[in-house]
Length: 161
Image 1 (tube, one colour):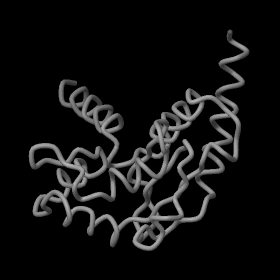
Image 2 (image 1 turned 180 degrees about the vertical axis):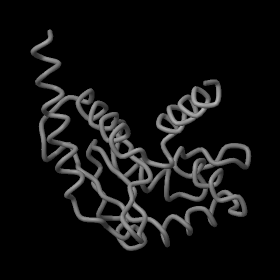
Image 3 (image 1 turned 180 degrees about the horizontal axis):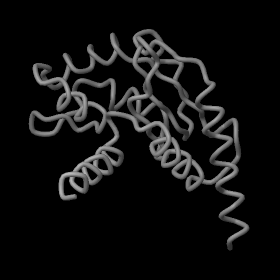
């Protein structure tokens, strides 16, 4: 079992390297080019290239559904609030930004996308999830809640000491 975990970690680290070296794409122009394969993706600031969000797309229609159908679809809402985890975080961060179309427009203007589809690598979903966790821990993206909760815990500990 330990050997299998080690193999999975090595595969996840390779996927991280491939994703980090993948080209940054302007999402405003490539909706039809995003594959329907499962995979991992990240969003970077257009200026400076800082990684702000890391995610996996492991469901039906994979990357296309997650990126185009959710993050870039202004109608992907629930009771007037953002349903996309990326867009929720963007709206929380940028106070005067309204949900829906304005948030999607902001993403198209300010962020670029990189992705690595599963078709290029035959591996299990758990390895993509592990790669996501590795990147979140190493890159500390602003819009991933997992990382934010770690930051908040550290801040609380500092205040209490």
